[in-house]
Length: 429
Image 1: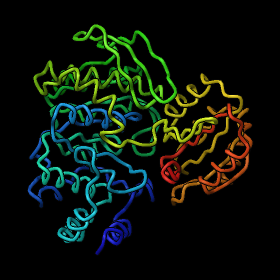
Image 2: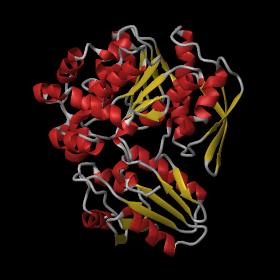
Image 3: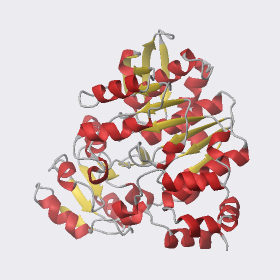
Image 4: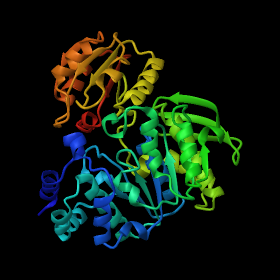
C-alpha cells in the first residue's frame, strides 16, 4: 500500500471521532494497554509531559515542545486533530512523521488492528509512541484527545501535567456540568506528579485541589505565579511584559495574536518554573522566551488567529465552543472594523445554541459547511442562526465563501472564518 491507501484503509477500518462523533469514542485504557503491551510498551521508553483542557491544550502543547527544542532536546509532539495532513499529529523536532514511516508501521502491525479492533485515535496514539521510541526522543509532549481520565493518552506516566482550563464541550461524553468535566480532565493527575493549572476558575479549582491532594501531587495555579504588566496587540503578534518569582521583568513577543493565548502563556511560563523547582527539567529563560517566540516556526502550528490577508483582514481560527468563540469575538470587537463578515461552519453534535447566542447581529454571515459527515448542513445552520437574528447567505465551499466576502468587503472590514476545526482545515492557505 502507498500512503494514501494506508490512510484510506485506517479511515475505513477504524472508528474515527471526527467522522462519527461519540460512537467512535472508546472510553477506557483497555485497548491502548493491549496495543502498547504487544509492542513492548514504547511509551515507557522516554519521559513525557501531559496536557489536557477544554481550550488551549493544542497551543500549549506546541509552546512546550518549542521551548524544549530551544533547550536542545530531541522532542516528540503528539496532538489532534490535524488540519490538512494526518502526519501533523505526530512530530519530531517540529517535523511531521514521514509518510513512508506511517505506511511501514501500519503494514508491519496489521494483525494488531485485526486482533484488538482499536479506534482510530487509539491507533494513532500507539503510532506516536512507537515513532518517538524509534527517534530516540529526549522528551515527548502529549496532548489528550478528549477528557483525560479515560483518554488513551492517559496510559503514560508523565513527569508533570498541565491543565489549561475547563469549559463547555463534549458534554455528552464528559458530563453535563463543569464540575464533572473538570473531574474527567483531572484524571491525568498522577501520584506525586507536579500539576500546573493555567486558568483558575471557580467551578474547577476545588476539583483540582482535591485531586492533587488525593494523589499527593504538587499543584500550582498560574495566576499565583505570573503577573502581566502590559499586553499589546500588534497586528500579527502579542507583545507582553510580565513578572514572575524568578524573573521580575520580562518581555515576550507571541507569534499567535489571539488574546486567548495570554492565559495559555501564563500557564506555560508558570509550568516551566515549576518543572525547574521540582528538579524535572533545567530550562534557561532564553529557551522559554525563544521557544514561545519561535513556536510557529519550530512546530508549524496553524489555525490560531491565522492571518490570511490584511486590508481587509481575513483571519481563520479553529474556535468551536462557547469559551473559544467568546474570546475570539471579543478580540474582533476591540479592533472595531467598519463591517464584520463571519464565515461560519459547525459540527452537528455541538451545543449550537450555547454558541449562537454569542454572535453579533450586525455582522454579515456566510454559512458554510466542512466536507465531513459530522458537519451541520449550511442551510440548517442558517435556520438556527435566524432564531438569534443572524442573517446571511449559504455557501458550502469555504473557499468560495471567502471569495464572496472578499469581493464585497471594504479595506477596513474584517472577515472571520471560524466555528469548526474541520472548516478551517479546508481553507486553501
